[in-house]
Length: 285
Image (cartoon, rainbow, N blue to C red; front, side):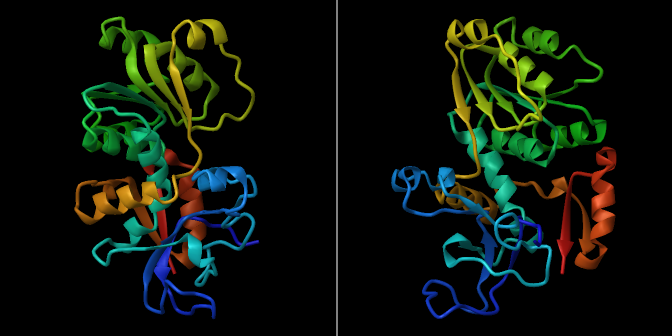
C-alpha cells in the first residue's frame, strides 16, 4: 500500500470512460472517494459517505511518481496556483470548512492547535473578518508564524494558564467561536470551558482516547452549537479554496517550511519529528 493523500500533478493518461479530464490538465485530488448511493451522498453530504474510500488508505496514494485516481475526485487547478500550494488544498480545505462553517465576521475566534491546519485556519479567520483571533499551541516557532498569518494573540499552553488568559481577554465572557484542531484531550476540555454561552464549538481534532466532558454545564446549560468537521464539503469547499488562492487573497505559503525531492522523503519524515523547526513539508517527484 502506497501512502500519501495530499498532492497535485499533471494528467498523463486517462481511461476510456473519462469525459471531463484530458492529458495535460493540472489537477489536485479530493481524498474522499464517495459511493454516491448512500443516504449522506444522496443528501448532498458526500464527504460523510457511509462507504467512503480514501486515497492513500484504501487505494494507492501519492508518495510516488504516478498515481491513479477516479475522475470524480480530480479537481482542475488554475495554472496560476504554484504546485506546492495546489498540493495542500486538501488540508487547506479542512481549515476553510472548519473555520467558515459558521459566520465569524466580527466575532472572537480561539483556535486550539498550531499544526499546519490550525495555522491555515488562522489565515482563513483573518480573511473572513474575525474581530479577534487567539491561537493556542505548544511550539514557539509556529506561534510566531501564527502572528504573521493574522493571529492577534498567541498562547503557549505549556507556559500560560490558557483558560484564565482567554477569559481575561474576552472580559470574562468567553470566545464567540472555538475551533479545536489539536485533538488533545486538554485542548478539547479547555475549548469547551472558554466558548461563551450561546457560542459555537467546532470539533476537528481527533483525540487519541475518550474524552470526559461536563455535558450538562459545558453544553446544555451553555446552549452552545457544536459542529463536527470531517473532510471538506464536495465541492463547495474546493470552490472557495481555489477562488481565494487564484485571486491571491489567502496567503499561506509561509506554512510550507521545507521542500524535498521525493527520494529524500526520509529527511521530511525526520523533520516532522522536530516540529519546533518545521510546519508543512512538500515533496517533489
